[in-house]
Amino acid sequence: MNDSSASPKTPCSGNCTCTGNSAPPPAGEPTGISRRTVVKALGATLGVAAYAKALAPLTELTKETSMDEFIQKHYKELSKEEMAAVIQRLTQEARDHYGADVTISDPQPEEGVKFGYALNLSICNGCRKCAEACHLENNHDRPSHQSYIRVFEMSKGSMDFEKGNAHYDHPVPQPDKYYMPVQCQQCEHPPCVDVCPVEATWKEKDGVVVVDYNWCIGCRYCEAACPYHARRFNWTRPQIPAGEINPDQSYLSNRIRPQGVMEKCTFCLHRTRKGRLPACLEACPTGARVFGNLNDPNSEIRWVLENKRVFVLKEELGLKPQFFYFFDE
Image 1 (cartoon, helix red, strand yellow):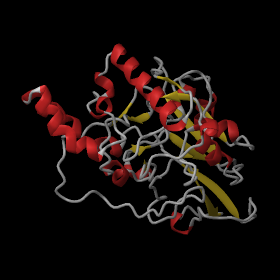
Image 2 (image 1 turned 60 degrees about the vertical axis):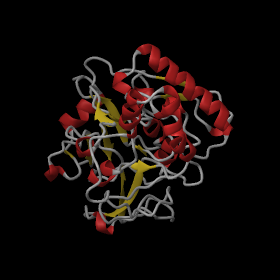
Image 3 (image 1 turned 30 degrees about the vertical axis):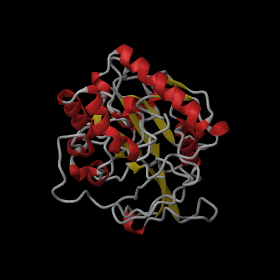
């Protein structure tokens, strides 16, 4: 289903079957316009009958895409009534396509909250329980075994991802290794947002970078721009048995994504904005993961930042990731 690669020139996680050979969009590709812009302009100049006739070839090519979905407004432009109608359509699609009854919410960022994540590399044992939990929680395509998390087996004393192994299949932990899970770093200055030609991705007030899956045009500029290779592309419509679908869903988070769009980790905002913890954290058997509100001086994440020697990946890029790593002294 999805397309990703690890840190530059490194393999994907053993939880995924993608090839990691993503290429940047072709030079000269139009920017600043979406299919919806074209459709809206067309509708404004043609009569109803001519409008429908003009769209016939498009709808023939997108049989699984309803007209309501095709001309849907950007998330930020939707009124409460329009969002309610969109959610109603999406829940019906889940019932029609998957035979599942789901609840799709739209939780908003809380005032004064900025999410941060930290990971203790001294006690991560490389079990990949976090990646498995992500796979199930976020309604990923089952045949690909996709996850937003890749776990690298690294040689102790080294930070060279060129020599890291994300495909290990032996018992863990190995005595001369340590394990580094990598996922979206929720950058303060996310390059993936800057390059999106239709503004389908943006950073929310609580620090989470999100995607409007129904506005994304699948150009994959964001995937090419992300230095952590945290973006995924849906090559096909996800295959998930009805009994395995997580019914607790959010519009900007773990609802089943359409074919042909990008997706990414959202710190499980369908959980965390309601006071719960990310699924990957709850699944960690060693307690290596720490999550919380960076603005709360009494939060566990703040204690880690103030009392441990933390570091971020690719600090030299100046993106200011809100995902931190540390070792016990």
